[in-house]
Amino acid sequence: MLKGKKIILGISGGIAAYKTPQLVRLLKKAGAEVRVALSAGGSRFVSELSLATVSGEPVYREIFPETGIPGMDFTRHISLGEWADILVIAPATANTLARLAAGLCDDMLTACFLTLRPGKSVLIYPAMDGQMYRSASVQRNIAMLKNQGCTIIEPENGDLASGQCGTGRMPEPETIASRIGIVLPDSQYDSPLKGKHVVVTAGPTREKIDGVRFISNYSSGKMGFALAEAAKERGAKVTLITGPVHLQTPEGVERLDVENACEMYAEAKRIYHSCSVFIAAAAVADYRPDTVYDGKLKKQNVEMQLRMVRNPDILAEFGAVKQSGQLAVGFALETDDGVENARKKLREKNLDLIACNTFDRKTSGFEVDTNVLTLIDRNLEETALPLMRKTEAARQLLDYIERLMDSEQ
Ligand SMILES: Cc1cc2nc3c(=O)[nH]c(=O)nc-3n(C[C@H](O)[C@H](O)[C@H](O)COP(=O)(O)O)c2cc1C
Image (cartoon, rainbow, N blue to C red; front, side):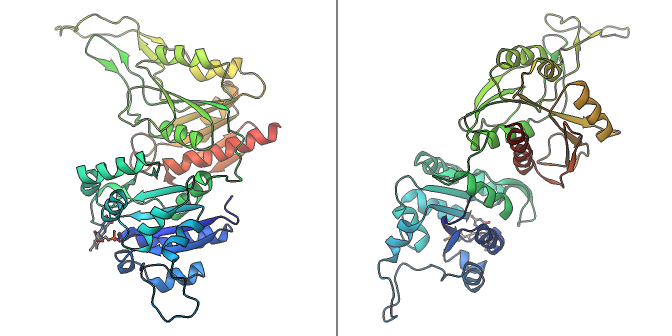
């Protein structure tokens, strides 16, 4: 994917800059040509010598060249930007975001941004303290850069250099490198998902008891949203059917909001026939109260019993009606005998792939940003993925789906 691609890596002065020599190494290993534009702030966090050594190129900093050096390119402040296929800025500090949004040109990093040829991509990874990231000024600058067509990747949640925990972390170099391959214009990367319709269900469902109460679960929708975004990045047409969550819709994804299992079933059923891949990541309630009371149920001085009835099994039904060429992918969250139960579910629901979700409140399962998945395919082949961010787990799951699609052709 990256072979022969010309990448400028802009590094500004955030603590995450320490990860960048590793990123340069990964990009070079993948066959890319990498030149580094380092801001003055960036040079306080990572050494120019390390970056020059791993990239095999001089590091670009000041706009003004030193005179008297034989062969010096005196217009390099223009030519470097013209050279590139993509400009990746990681980490992007609050300061550098402001400089980019304002159109300043006071170092080689900002000069590259202004001189990049039309149609070339800019991928920006803001990384900073969570409070700083949420500030109105930073958000305004991000919105301006998005409007100009830059791809801004929201920082991850986790431990920050400040010692606090929050949103502000730069993703790991492996994650950034794989994203660059996908975002690159005229990239050779041709996913079998390109142009295909992928349906993802996400989030919890709410099963009403009365006008003000419901039965639900802790699902946050993060895994499903990450899958929808990753499928979109690979060129799929994505429909995301989601229960009530507090997440932003990934760009370019069609979102259908539902509240309960029956509504999710109705939406899914409408598009069973048109989708190539159906990924059921939602935590759909198995049961709902038989009767939903109008208004608020009054407290009584006696015990109360709720009669529950089965909800439709959205994935099992898709598995039963799917045609050849359509793939059914499920999730199994189990507290006991996870893999064994996931295998059973795979067989019973006629699935092509199932991701068994290990339940551990701190690192995997509901609400958290990370997950530990074991993938089991229709041949009962097992792949255990290590602990990783849901965004990365989503990409690995889609890689697997792509391999299944390729093997069908
Ligand atoms: C220890 C330390 C860590 C910093 N980490 C960050 C950071 O992660 N993100 C950020 O936006 N600014 C951070 N800053 C502030 C920037 O370094 C500062 O705004 C600098 O002017 C950025 O310059 P540049 O954007 O030109 O590289 C940090 C400063 C210090 C002293």
